[in-house]
Each structure stands twice: as C-alpha cells, then as structure tokens.
Amino acid sequence: MNKIKTDFLVVGSGFYGSVIAERIASILKKKVLILEKRNHIGGNCYSEYDKSTNIEYHKYGSHIFHTSNKKVWDYINSFTKFNSYKHQVLTNFKNKIYQMPINLETINSFFNKNLSPHEAEKYINKISKKYYKNKYDNFEEKALSQIGLELYSAFIKNYTEKQWNTNPKNLPASIFNRLPLRFNYNEDYFKNCIWQGIPKDGYTKIFKGLIDNKNIRLEKETYNLNKDYKVKYMTIYTGPLDRLFNYKLGKLKWRSLLFKKKIVNVNDYQGTSVINFPEKKFRFTRIHEPKHLHPERKFKNDKTLIIYEYPKTSDDEPYYPVNDEKNRLRHRQYKKMAYKIPKFEIGGRLADYAYYDMDMTISAALQKFESIKKNI
Ligand code: UDP
Image (cartoon, rainbow, N blue to C red; front, side):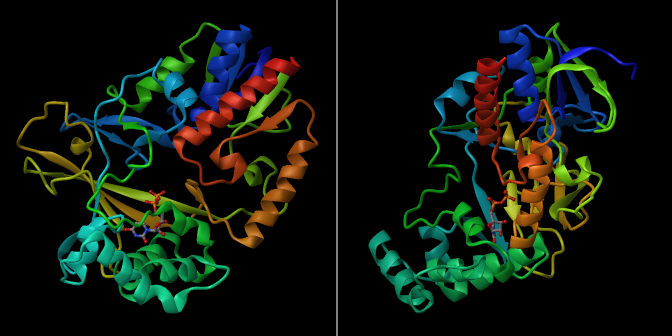
C-alpha cells in the first residue's frame, strides 16, 4: 500500500472496527482507512454462499444475533432486516436427543420422570445441594452446584473439556453462567433477549453496508505498529494485542475452531440448525445445518450443507480468550503498553481479550465513538 494520508486508521473490519468506521465517516465526515489482513470483511461474523447448494453459511460458526439493547437494535436495523428465527439447541447424548440449555424436558427425559416445574426445581436442588459453596472458584464447582453430578457428567463436563482442551476446573465459573437452567419447557436459547434473528440477507451484507461510504477506504494489509501510516487523529486497533507487540511478553492463549463442510444428498439432515455432541467419542462438538437459520428462504430439496465444528488449540485464528489468571495478567500488561502509544485506541473481542457477543461489541463501538466525537 502506498502511503495514504487518513484522518482515522481502523485495524480490522469486524463489528467493532466497521461500526466505528461507519460512525466516523457518516457523522464526523472524516476519512477512514480500514486495514484488513484477511481476504474478506466482517471478522468472524462473515457469511458466504456454498456454491453447490446455494446455502448461505457463517464461515466461523452459526451466529445468532440477540440483544435487549435498544440502541444497538435500532442501529443495526438501519443496515439490515432480521428474519423471525429463534435459536434452539439440541444435544445428542448416547444416541438420544435432549434440549439444551437444560430445561424441564431435558430433566424429565434424562431422569425418566414426569416432574412439574416446582418438583423439578426441588429435585435438582436436592441432588446439587452437596456441592453448594459460598464462593465458586471454577467452572466445575459452579456447574455441580447448579445441576448436580449426573447432568454435569452427561452434557457439560466432556463437552467443555473437548471445547476448551482443559479440565473445567481450570476455567472461570463465569463461563457456566452463559448457560441458563430452566424449570419449564421453554426451548428458546435466547429467551432472555428482547430481539433475536438472522440478518435476512446475511451478515456480510451488513458489513458491506457499514463500509459503503465515500469516506471509507478498505485495504488488505496486516497492520504494522512500526510503519508510519500518516494518521491525523487516531488509530483504532481491534486485533489481538500480543500480535501487535510481536509477542514481546509471550502469547495470549485462545480457543480456536475448525469447520469441515459436507454436502449431504437429503433435504434435511438433522431437522435443526445446531446439535451439540458432548461425548468424547466424537471429536467434533457440534453439527451445524445452516439452511435452518433461514426458514423464510426456499432451498432446493435434494441437498443440504452440514458443518462439523472441531475445537482447536492453535491460536492462528483466535475465537475465544482462555481467560485464566496468567493470560489475564499478560493481557493487562499488553494493554498498558498499548495505552502508552499516542493517538491509539483499542477495542473489540480480540483486543479486549473478552468473550463478547455481537451486540456487546456494537454497543462498545458506539460508546467509543461518542467519546471520540467529544474529544475531536
Ligand atoms: N456447554 C456445555 N455443553 C453444551 C453447551 C455448552 O458444556 O451443550 C458449556 C461449554 O463450556 C461452553 C459454555 O457452556 O463453552 C458456553 O456455551 P455457549 O453455547 O455460550 O458457547 P459458544 O456458543 O459461545 O461457543
């Protein structure tokens, strides 16, 4: 890339970078240069079409947009419409399908009972009571105290060990809080959110809309801290901080994923968009069937696309931070280094080393924009 003068430099075109770029370009009318090292925009939210089936799929795993944040919902709805998809997850244990998160159907089916909501709650409290503590220091302690040993062993322990490649005792209790426990038959995974759905025309279309602005320019380039990019106001960096500083303080650990696509010659392979596989005998953790994410679309009936999700430890494609003590400390030290760089801001899931959902990322970007606007 030739040296180009720009008002703002944004590194990374995921939600954080693209939303900030859009706001700066549309509201402040300043020039933004986005650097993206991948050969596509949108970060891990990128979606594309499988050529042989014409089914759109999320390249980095099924992304279901869900939020209760009105600001975020209004903002994103000016770039896309959403379909009426409601997320449901099933889990396959010993060749039987159960509902996930664990709800009344899961409990009754697993224990072969017919409990009412009140009875189920009493029963689960009874079997998990012996694991109660004042403070839960890790994922396993928290999970056992909520659901007891049997459900934990069947649906959680091995799945978590496969997914994170570590004993659940080494993971923070907060990860278990992502999984609700229900004593009713509600199977809507995101029932606590006011809005959810899949962008009608896919995620990539949103990113195209966000950066389609005469003030925004996109370049395929890996950012280099030592290069002089001629930035007037500020650089906003959204990539991992260890990479930014050339791993000076060591690597940050990430959990990564690998996806293997397969075309199957049936109309419907598994009847739903995601099935989890908690057992160790399967190396994959999930099977995605993306056509189910778009019930409003018409598909050819003779084929479907399925995608196996395998956990991967290598961090060349970072997905989830392994947020243990050691890595958190290392990230804090990197952050201090980043704060020392003049006219330099960081944000987003990778730079913050945080387990953000899409709406949290958009919300953080909108807030950051407000502070940029004030200070410019
Ligand atoms: N989890 C599990 N069994 C399941 C689903 C989830 O043990 O069937 C655990 C697992 O440790 C996972 C965490 O719950 O990392 C959070 O699940 P979530 O579905 O939010 O994970 P994500 O979709 O972000 O990978």
